[in-house]
Image 1 (tube, one colour):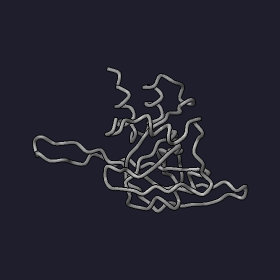
Image 2: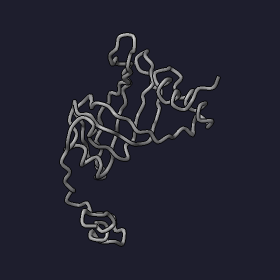
Image 3: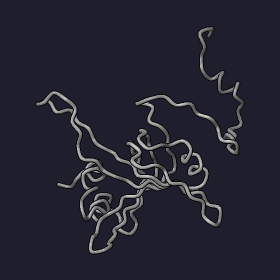
Length: 173
């Protein structure tokens, strides 16, 4: 029986041959593995912000994501295994996340999945990296106040704010 996509993304992540299994499940070549994923979890390390000599801002941190399920026998929620991901952000997202994200906060991350094998000092393992395209606080667990950055401008859609507001009915309508 061939595993489903959901099973591949979550069930084989800790397997030593995760890259092989993910490539097999998505029917692509192992060297062409590039997937967009969305994760929720808790920031496990303080974000580390650096700027390269070329002026590229980079912020990275670790994200812990634990699956929960309801155990009918015990009649309570139980934690599953925790998967750890290395999250990396670039440019304006890196600058904004460095001042917005703190260790212990619950966040959502969307980005490109990268799986890397490593070996050092007789040990070997697999790193699961996410190159983030977007991230933010998980509002299922709290509230946030958004403030636009100094250099950020909205995308021009050709309509004005009053045009957008008129698209929604009011009590007077």
